[in-house]
Length: 303
Length: 274
Image (cartoon, rainbow over all chains, first blue to last red; front, side, top):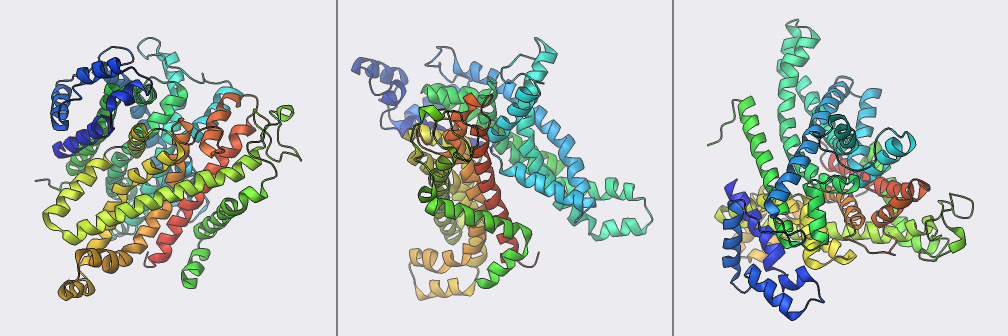
């Protein structure tokens, strides 16, 4: 994981600061004066060799110092971490909702393989997986906020401030993000469960005279859910990408929206911090998934 | 090939996927000829018109005919997505095959790096690249292509590792062929099947990713009739004129579903044992 994070940090720093012919011009725009450019170059240490710049940046970043935002003048690290906490709330709720919906869907589809329910689930998951987040978000807004007037279309209220209003604002983003996850995971649960239901030990359990319920929950489901954990972890990658769009549409001030704002206003320290934090989140999620996998399946050992 | 086609048409996914692909190709090839109006023609008197016999899908805030814009936009959206995927596939395939061929430490290093790059979500990666290159349709194409390369490298490598063990590769090594010859002429053609499957599925991601970039204002720029951009522009008017946002969304979704279905059907058709 350390290696992965090191590569990611080089990549992020390289793309944002080293590769552009002149990061100062990129940040201030083409029309900046020569003095402003020179001042910025000196402030960023752009005249130093690339690896020295990288070392400085990484050293500071490891201490939680990502520099100050060019847009607001505030420390970027704190800003991004606060935004991250909002995004994690969104992601956590979306994963929760996804598990509540996708598991039963996948199980029903597997049990009724080839029947109407199965067909319906696979159609829904195809459609869900093929709609970009911004299309789903638009449809959701059109339906829930516009026609039914159920929920506020955009904005964000902290849960600590007003729990119910906060939840109402979060409902549509969470719903949007979870649709794609549901599509993936329901399909995965279905195909794993179908395999497991055909295995010898499930047949043996049935022949032993155990009730279908016990066979399903005690024998089949446990093994079918293991690969699903990996898929959920991989989906965190999708989730992070999706969050960027969804936060932008619903005006939710999470890390994705901060990143878009940073990119649009050429706020280099903020872009670097945001990208690094997002990639690290993904790495950590995968690491946790590996650990959970090993914990649940004692046969796996990591050296 | 006819055998493959027959198998594809036998599965519902393949049939639907091929049908959507055919319509899409038709739109890309003859769309601009078939379009009833100029996609950038402004008709101030015909603004916000709901679907009618004149404007089948209605008009937008400048009175532009939405059907014509969609037909022109097929080129911008779908061909860009296909080209981006092809670019990413090519780069990834070369890296992956090379890595599998060289093996050992180099392989390990390349693959660990690829894994690391994969931990950057592809939308974020594409955003960073667009940020570096500047926003335009062409740069979005490059960004999507580059963002796809690591994933394709991983898939190609695992396919190539199987091929690497085959006798004809050892024979080529024994003949003293150059690395370049072995990778490009002996190995690559034989790892093509899994790559094509993955590529088809990825085109559907590319359509979505590219539309998303345009939607965020970082891909195609107005007044281009790009589908993602059309959705973004229509957002402001969706309360009163929902058709403006519905049609391009539907177009994106249909193409994405089509390639997804086709990819799955191809996988089944090329791999008959499952």
